[in-house]
Structure formats: C-alpha cells, structure tokens
Length: 335
Image 1 (tube, rainbow, N blue to C red):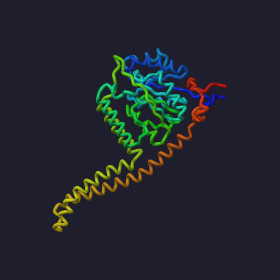
Image 2 (cartoon, rainbow, N blue to C red):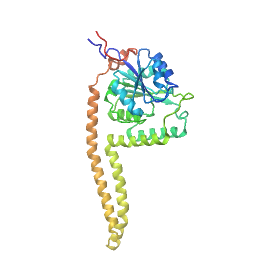
Image 3 (cartoon, rainbow, N blue to C red):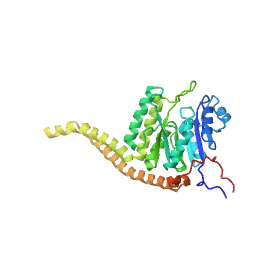
Image 4 (tube, rainbow, N blue to C red):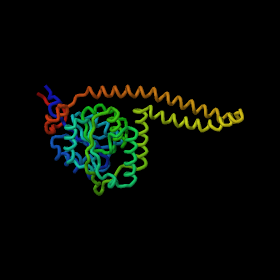
C-alpha cells in the first residue's frame, strides 16, 4: 500500500526565477541546509544568464516555463507539484532560507492554510522610493477593499497548505499573483498568519525586475478585477453612485429653471441626465444580481477546499503536534 499523506507532511520549496544566476545557487543551498529532505524546485522563466545551470549544480530540480511572468510560473508550479506543505520564495537572495523552518512550524502549530513572511524593513530597502510608496498605498487599499487580514500583500515568502494550493484558481500573469493569493484567502475566510522576517538587500549584480509604473498599473488593474469578481455589489454600486451624481448635476439647473418658469429650454441636458440616471439604476441592479452569483461561487470554492485532505500534523491538537518532518515529496512509497 502507498504511504498515507496524513502520516508525515511532505515539503516542497518553490523558487520562480528569471535571470537570477548570481543568487540562485546560494539560495538553493540555503534551503537544502535548512530543510535537508525537502524537494527544491526551480522554475526558470526564460532566463538568459545561466540561472537554470546554477540551480541544477546546486541540487535543485529545474523546469522551464515559457510563458513570461511570475503568475504563469506560480500557476504551473501549483499544478505540477504534489506536496503537503509548500514554501515559495524568490531566487534573488532577499529572503533568508533559514527562516523557512519557522514558516513551516507556524503553519503547523497555528493550523493555518497560509503563512506570510512579512518584510521587516522593506520600506527602507525597497531600492527606489516609488516601490516603498507604492507598497504602502497598495496595502492600505487592500485593507480598505478586502479587509485587514494582511499587512504586506506583496511578500514573496510564504508557506501554504495543500488545501490552499489545490483550491487556488490562479489567473494572474505577473507580479499581481501575491495580491490574488491574499484575496483568495480573504474571500474564503481561510486561517492565515503573518510572521515578521528580515528582508535582505540584493547582492551586487542582481537587479529588480519590478517597474514602478508598469507593474503598479497592472496591480491596480488586478485590484479592480478582483473587486469586481469577489465584491460585485460594492464595485458596481460605486460606479452607479458616480453616474447618479453626474445625472443629478446635469438635472439640477434644468429643474431649477422649470420650477421658476415652468419651461424646459435645455431639453438635451434633461435627456442626458435621465439617460445617466437609467445607467445608474442598471448598474445597481447588476451589482445586486452579481453579488448573489459571487456568493454562490465562493460557497463552491469553499466546499472544494473542505474536500481536500489535510496532513494529520495540521489536524492534530496543538499539544500533539509533532516536530516538522521533511520527507521528500513525490510518488508514494511502495509498501
């Protein structure tokens, strides 16, 4: 008989990489030293500087993902790899591999589905002031729209349960994937935790792939799309209110003239105001209907999430939780 996945949880370390030859070797070796029996998976996203070779020499299993963008890489990783506990980090050396054991321990002891390694000192070391300012603004926007579950939605250092990974319908193509992960957890009200960790600086020769304005625009667009999908009533009500205010603005002088003289001399303005009013009503109605649809979809996702098996180390009472076991994920062992 195959070994049950509920005996000892398997751990997989996932490292999406693009042109990280200068750092990927030490990162892989660091995770191998911290989690000796975990499988280290490096997914190379069309690197041109020998990243894949350095990862293989360091002992990682390397796969190439041709679709450019971190979101495509993470979606492929989550689909390909079967494990009980997943750790995802960047290959640029800014996250300490030595913190992985604490992430796993927190995931198990708090029985969480996702633990986020929040970045201590990220505002000081973001490299460019635009990145630091954008990080603050987007985190504030997230808490306003989706709730106060997270303080650092862009952290790339996270630990996941199998239930999270296999119920996560990733659709993002780029750096917006961390935002989508956070929204997925908030939407299904999954148990999550945060762990403050040191955030390192890139070594010489390694450069950030983030573009302040291009990637910031993509993330803002993802915020809008996720709000439309998960909170359609709030999304469409906001747009409806905008059209309503515009309608009342055009309508007010026409009504004032009518009550003063009994005449409507600006008929086109009146027609425009009524058209805007009708659009406002239709958007509000769409929000009400789509809110019911979104609730039904969330219920289906929740049922699917609940149907997935969880390692016994996570299900056991805290007093019975055993030390972290680091068996290599892969095919089940033969009896």
